[in-house]
Image (cartoon, rainbow over all chains, first blue to last red; front, side, top):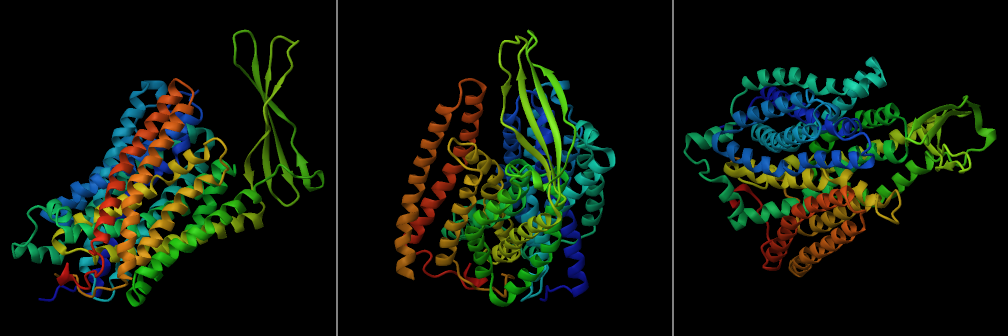
Length: 509
Length: 83
């Protein structure tokens, strides 16, 4: 019995699967991209840095539940089929994203705001946990022999394109309505927009057919009765789950999130680059690198999956610190000399009362423009006491909203491109790699769990853990990188020693 | 290579509990260093989440090491019939 579809059909399958998955990633990432603004909306206004950390915790919670979504929906997918399961995940994701856009702020409903968002974020995580494994399995089970890496790599582009779409919608919305309106209510627009995208995707997916391999198993009465038990209590399968996690998925996860999410967070929050500039850099880097998902996916059909993925991890281990040091060096404006300055704006001082006795904070901002075309805001915050006999308290000068000179901007784009290129190496072939490790009847469950622990937990926690490490006493701005470097190095060692480089031509068991 | 795979199994078995102890020590250190009040609660919550996630993963690493030591990874399946 031949289950290989015609070429035009496989592209319909890829298109329909990828669109839905792309939208799910979009939904998932707009929260991360707007973490700072959401922090200011959901927590008390005097929460300061803890608001960001709490928001990242909520963000991280979305990742942590992904493995549970993988178990719940993976089981469903192996019992009732791939098609209906990832329809369900799509609806859950779209609904929860839309509702996040409707949650009132902390000023309106107090702590109910972050609690409601946390619940919706958990639903998002569960839905995504079920979605990816379904889409990858569905496409792989339609793919012809010898081209599984190439066809599943299209699904692999969706995570990065989802991030690209989320950044694009955010930047576009902000530019249309203005920064103040965006911070006030405009951040809700990307969330609300999701419902339109989801409806289109549900309509397309409704027209799809069930996976031919799953249909065959079902018609023969060979589907698993208890996929969870078969996946994790049978040693021959469970050892492959562990190998997939420690030898591939965890390294892939940290490389993915360092190259795309941590890079953006570092450039914006540590280097203090202007909001739009930091996003434009990432958009360019992603746009240039995305085709390489397909290139490395297709190449893995010829040379095997293992060494492409492990080379990406090794390059990450070796290059992250030099790359991020370069980010810091090129945005250091503390040693600008007067000969480099083109213009300094008139200082603008804002006073904010901090005490009933009349003590206040005076925030003085000047915009410094340099001859090379770059500029930055120099901010001096002074504590002015009502009692004139007390000396004015000076806080260290802050430099922020840095706009880079053209050559520096493109160097940043190049460095981000390189990091996303590493992402394409580790991520392009991994769907085919995971699909080939497990038999059809428990494939959805078995491949979803290591993927979501690796990508969701190890990877998703990169911004949170790295920010946490960088906040430790005695740490440097680069200290946070030890987390992804350590995990990627461990994964490289395990993968090198234990993984085989086989390409299984036949998954039609 | 088989000997290396098996020998490293001991490393993975040890790495699980040792890294867990390190994580607990870090958690204790950071929580006690945080200023009393909401900051300390916040730090405790963050580390609680991290430990809750980390312990099962460390247990998985021990099981992985046990399998490696027992030679379960000496030969991996080469086609779907062996899965």
